[in-house]
Each structure stands twice: as structure tokens, then as C-alpha cells.
Length: 151
Image (cartoon, rainbow, N blue to C red; front, side, top):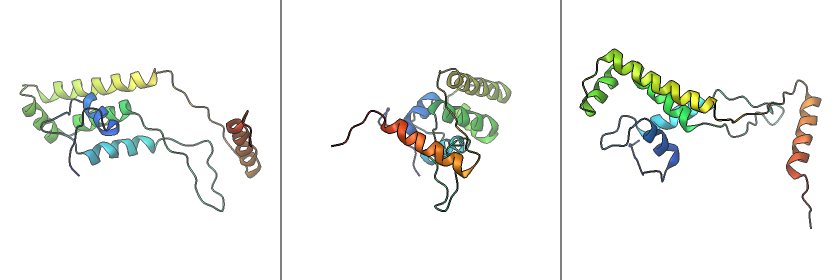
């Protein structure tokens, strides 16, 4: 897959690129690699609504964050010496490998800290039994349809 940067028109690709200064003309990461960073991050999410019944697994859409995707890409770049050497040549900057790795990891950690301190949170309701899942399911339906009238 090609590498693109549309200046924000494609947020899921453009925003991580902006955060890691991969806006061209020569790109470090392919679009598919950025999408893979989202997938890796979303695999850490576990739904409190999970119940594997006869219909199989039904998970809600997993959240994935631009800051966390950018941090993962920066850490991947820091751990790949060959790619890191290419970046130093692209930027026309003379950095020692150790200094570049430290700078990338520090930036990645700042992005993770920003996300951790953003004020967002989850409410997790765990279901231990089939009956607990059914109670949880109908409570969620009631919460989502509360106050609505039909007709």
C-alpha cells in the first residue's frame, strides 16, 4: 500500500503522520503500517460486554487513539536501527543512534502521558454468568432507549 498525507482529510492516517513528522515528501511509514499500529493498540481493549454464546463473539468497535498509534510508531522506529539511519539522512541531521533513540522514545512517552491524562475513562461492567450477562444486556438497552417515545 502506498504512503499518503492529505493534510487532515484522512484523519486516521494523517494525524499520526503529523505527530511523528512523517508528512513527506519521502515517507517513513506506509499507510498499511499506520493502520497496523491501530490494530495492535485496539487488541489491548477488552469489552466488559463480552459473552460468547451460540452466536459467537460480539465485540463493540475497539477504540484506538491517534496519540497511542503515533507513540507505537515512534517506538517501532526507535527499535529499528536501519530505518532510524534513513530518517537521520532524510532530516539532514547528524545524530548519534543512541541520542535519536532516546529522543524518539521520550516523544512517544509524552504522547502516552497526554493520552493517559486526557480525562477519558471507561466504565467496565463484568459479567460472570449467563444470567449476569442478560441482566447487563437489558440494563444497557434501557439506558440507551431511556426517555424515547415511539409513534
